[in-house]
Image (tube, rainbow, N blue to C red):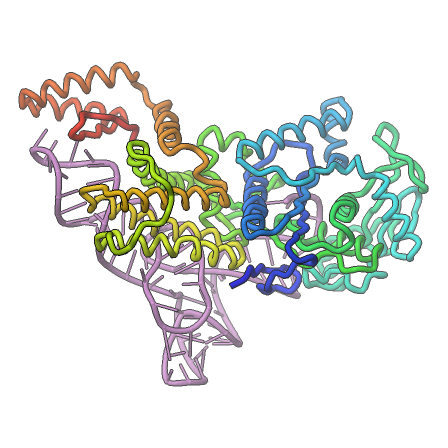
Length: 493
RNA sequence: GGCGCGUUAUCCAAGAGGCUAGGAGCCGGUCUGCAAAACCGUUAACGUCGGUUCGAAUCCGACACGCGCCUCCA
């Protein structure tokens, strides 16, 4: 089964066939850099990160372009608020964006262009649009005449009359049609500007993505992505600009990720109910956040809540615990990752062997189905359970078992590489999660250790009353004791 | 008002005509002085009403509820 992707343009899953065999050109709308990124950006980043990684894993040579829109009304407003220039604001939030995406473990795109580095390309497209009659100059601004582009609104499946029925479109006297949008804005005093044939000014929103995508990927390319909220007007306008200027089909497959909700409502700047990536990462590990995002299909909405993040963490802990157990065995006896011989395994081993043999094919099948990461995770869990059962039932670790274990470990690393998970050593990751929890507890490690020692003595002398008293005392402070044959460890509940 | 999406067990969440999704939880077991943790096992579902079909969570229609877009948004 080959890769199938849901194309917003057609509303259907389609077989993915790239323009040039073996190669993929992909453009994803980045951010307008005027503030810190929120978890909605994190979702878009992670979603297209795994799409990028999976395409490469599937053998494609991928050119992945993700832009910075570093000139825009909002950036200028922010600069005015802080009595500084637009460049200072843009550079600050470009840096913040880079830091956040690095924290999230995103692979670097092939190119990360800035709008202000592509002003000449922007001007060239606008000039072509004017020449072809798709755009007109009006009092220092240039507008796109939407009525000249019959396919306008084909992506969002609307028509101009319906849009106007909404009656919320302001009629500007500079525009011929209320839905016309600015390609170029004449600069007001004190605003940043670039020279153009239509006077000093700056690009409107939308045109920079047409310019940068065409610059790096050509007039027609394979995948264009972004959040669902960009379908209209941003992507609709990009199509009008790009196809109007080039006369060619702009994008073959449009991919859009769903929203992050808070209490089942869309999280957004205007509603004020958003969390920044940095805030969230103070509370939750980056892989936990990524795991949470991947636990739902990328087109579905996800509800961001402590409970859901906690559940994601529990799930990830389950997988990491299993990997940790595998590593512990392998550290004692390193072995090559060659596939074990089925005949020599016990029945449980054979069950596991089957799961393991199916792991990659089933993973690929899930991801080929419009990047179904939720299903992919389900398959991982099935393998974890089979592995745990095998480890529990296997008394003697033979060479064949070892080989199987090494193979499983290798496959988890391979899949983790595509999903951006399991990058940490299991022991380190589990320790980090434990430490993070320990930070919330009002008792020192020394005190805990002292009480554990006292309890051990009590238990040794069969003073179970005192022993249980200490256990309850610690539990009341959120400390869970973990007794084993090798002594007592503790964890934060 | 227009257009679109969704409703799966206690919760989260895949699936999309007949094939155990998965996770968290509950419950049972192993372990333990007793527990806990861990592991294993188990449980349960397709919003309502009609229709198509040998067979419907899945396809079609109506209804209810929720959400999104139509203004800056990932």
